[in-house]
Image (cartoon, rainbow, N blue to C red; front, side, top):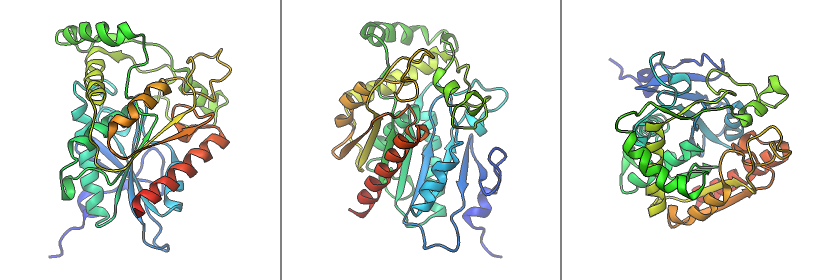
Length: 324
């Protein structure tokens, strides 16, 4: 009897959100998505896994096509309780420890390495996904084989610190750490995401996405998730030792997430880019910054000029890192 292939084991089916040629497969509590690499092209030079952020999921078809055109086998993972992986009884994006979602990244990495044997692995991670991927890469820095960390790590506006006054980042965090043991699902932040609202094509933006999975009204932040994030950010602040080359890409400025902000479409209105810049050197020994003037929080969703600057700069750096 013929042994089953990695493809057979995963049971790929047409992606129910994006349709053909995208495919999806369950990966435990997570979902793996792929854009099949064209059979009539030269073999791929590397494989890439995209990791989304909070109030987010994989919908960026242009990102898949851009990576594929550059010679990469493209995959994305919708983490547990998010996007395609969200179950009716789950609170969206809610985890009590970022290591839960890091387990999903590890599972995706093992699956892609089985599917694309011998290829370097690039992880392209955004926002909270960037924080989680950084912690995973650090934890797996000495692992080998299927359990190894990435060969290249691209961080697209990673959530390395809390955008808040100093007292909230210190005293407030300690208080919630205590409260979280008793009321982990209590809501501590709620309100619309003007950033997501502005991106949506129905509101005059550039992008189509499922508003039940990326919500313009926002996803409430809960105590347990907040504590998990702050613990992860504390590990970043103490310094990581990511072994592979790291690219930290960010906008050149931050601003308020309000419809009155005239730079809503040209700033990071979710996180503080100065915090990213300050924490970048502590991620590892080989960290490069890419600053994108006019970029929004997800740099790949920026206006045409900044978006192309990000994609071009990121791909050039990634290829150089693979070739080194």
